[in-house]
Length: 558
Image 1 (cartoon, rainbow, N blue to C red):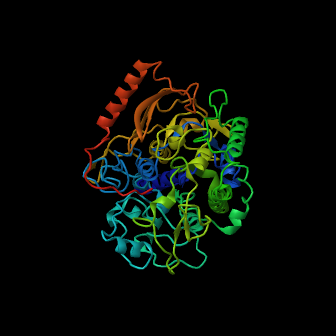
Image 2 (cartoon, one colour; image 1 turned 90 degrees about the vertical axis):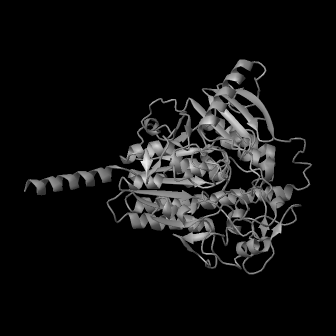
Image 3 (cartoon, rainbow, N blue to C red; image 1 turned 180 degrees about the vertical axis):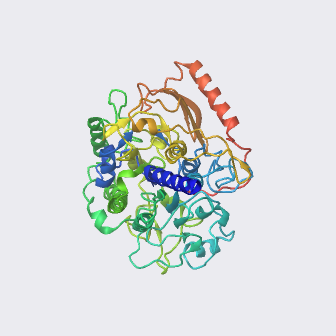
């Protein structure tokens, strides 16, 4: 009798705990600029993301690791990306910090949350496993063009379903044709054909909706990772979405950038006394004298359309949570993996992860001279440096660099039952994508392991965001570091030491008065430069950064 009563008590306690613990949904945009969405000052129509912000918290000092796969590795594991095995891209190198996949000496959010009874699923872009293709270039193109089949796009033990996710739909590699994506799988099964009218952003979000509906029938909480591909190049969007923005960008770079800056200041996203509008990149060319202004305006319109379509899907996710009675007790975080991309996608041409023709034989134009309009499946193009600079307003530079334009992400936390601070406000806690591990472990009642499946797991460097939900003034990280293909920074307090990938010279900025990094004070404070450089080198030495030079020619996958 006593045992029976004890069993009932334990079951009831567990059920009550399961109901109190929140569901967790992470929505990660791909190459979206800091000021692109409406609630961060953008002109793009994002009512659903704006809804999350208006009823949650916007973070003003949140950081990533400057590029797609390293950020994903850090976000998923709670570690610096080199500790997780992805110091560069997904090439396999014989160095612990550069294995090109999430190492066995790291645990993912899904693996940890499963131990606490969470259901787990992922929809979207994986991009944290080795992407080894055919050595023969023609065979590789045949594979990319869907004319040659393979059962595996990377080792199966590196797939999401081998790293804690019960369900997975999405792509294993990074770059996709949004109308007919390469490396698309369900679980571990390749999807050989997609239906007519397929658009990948819709498929990612609609799959997330179906997962939510399935989860609703269980008393167990769930963790859902929605890894969008939008708005990563190639610029491909639905014609009806592009049409919404056909005139939006005809005023040019300066007009859009200034309007964004003014809105950001009015909203409180930035303090204009400490955050100047940095000089526009390469401003010798005026919009009026730009011979490609029509093409450029259309390119940014397609970028906006891709974000608009993503927002529509996020709206369906929110509605599914509402209809299933899950919305109030679901923590949703929305962010971007890095700043907007300045890459000229057309210059790469076909090969590695970029097809030469569509499945039905239509040739793909790599618009190196802007000779084909962006938007359709048959054009590969991107917004380029000047629009990327606009997308990252008010900051300098872009994806892959360690300046604020590369590593400073918009981040929103929404949780009606758990966020008690005034809704629609801001947090200045210095946060980082690796903080999600510490935050979610705390909320789930989970335990971050010191060993997992026989492997030693490093301690997470993450700082919990939970106090910010209650309005507590928590400073967050006192120190943050980064390195990616030579681009690097050390932030200690409000001092930031940073260098470009193409220039090893350190620059020093005082973020307490210059958050947009416009005035280099390295010459004024040489002792500060020496101190921060020493701290950066100590971090690099203890976090598997900077391996021996590799003799292997690396793929340029973005």
